[in-house]
Image (cartoon, rainbow, N blue to C red; front, side, top):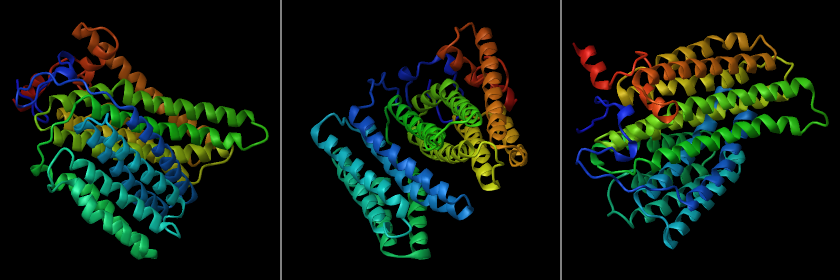
Length: 424
């Protein structure tokens, strides 16, 4: 059976590692994340921390915009490195050195972020361009020179970033925003020119690891305000506990209920590039940005547990969680042509609660938000168990797969059955 994006599939009966593409190819060899890639990710721990610090210094719309302008190019640099590692065997000296060179450039990017709109603009723009030139050189080891996002970044967005570093004020912002927009639109605009095949297990794991890096920043944000005080009050401890529960609940939303479905969708799609572009590249830009915003809100809550959150902080905290949940509506539609009703409902509940968050002490605002996300996890766990029971599967990964297409219907029906009934 040939699968297409959004075509009827049953993830309960398909092993992602054994899914076949449109060419009917045999089972693909397993590809593991390399140690070099994991080392590379450590640099992004630092970079994300610096983006969070930039956002922490300015909660307004201008601050959010500046944080996005410096985060988006760094994100696409990480994505390009992961795509290269997916397409190429990087367990060799040239590729390892290349990945380390990109990591050094990313480290310079992180160092530049606090002063990116001041005296470190040239460092930021230059480091970005060097990273993209290295990635283009690495790409030439496995493909001819061709028009793709690697080449566009090397010859268009890289020079724009460097020019922005040399400019000042609004001119820098305009040049960098243009470069970030080009990086973001390039995969969409070039989709018809790309027939790339990806290892279906490797890329979902890479993006999951990047999300773990972002969640790690939320843990740092929770703990750092408390460590800077001479004594830790009961209110601070309670807020830390509530914030940790919230972070763990967000982890549960992704890794207990969505990760397997993402891997399956990449394996089963006949146009893998389209699926990777939507549910990994674009969706995780939203997911990771949401976690960063949430982390900033948690930092402020732990720092002042008895005070009310300002509107800007509350908007980052609740808006970040709302965006995190809403993105799954996009991924579910792209994967299975279904709406994620439970997560959309939870996202709406989070956003509706925003006015309440500004009236409660920070501890109460975090506790209420954590309760909403935990309630979502409980509901989805119950529906997963119910769907798994009807499908006759065991609890665990098989049950999660069985429930993937049963979320709206609360039954283990296949996508084929759902689509036939819908179209009838």
